[in-house]
Length: 207
Image (cartoon, rainbow, N blue to C red; front, side, top):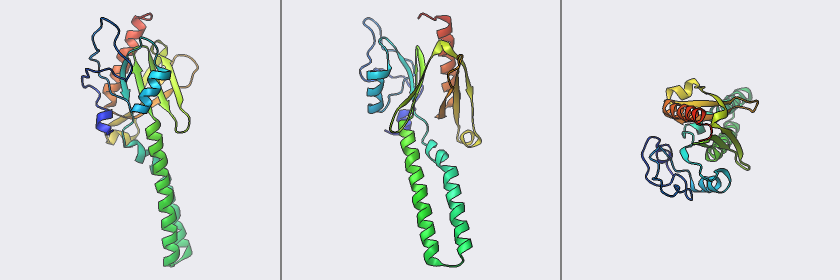
């Protein structure tokens, strides 16, 4: 599934947001911006995360820029180490090639790990809760009712800002740790939608 299809927030979708989640009898299908999740994560949502009658308003994954951003520091450190080793050992073409090959393997491994991290990230906004799913071998779920969200603020590093991306920190009112929706496209639009749902939940706490 391409990044464009995953993060097409704002498009009107006339189908259930997640397979298996259907509108209640007598209700029309919501025209709120909804983005389909990858099949495996959608199955996880419908089977273990979503509650009866809970409507999905938004599903996002990080931008693919997440992968190089997560790998940049490690890759730079490996390259610096390889160059330092080459300079320290003196002119030795065989050794230089070996050092560069090792550096390349390490960088490739870090990129693969970042891709797995990207695949495991999913951000979900429903009419009741805000969630973040993350993990590779096990899934870590941040789950906070909208009425218990104190703030949704920007944390935008320079590299994300240059690419028109952003990170949104979700801060609960209680003592639970905060969570971030990291490296998302159109972050201002996404944040506005989160705030709108938080305000709606605070005005209709039993709705």
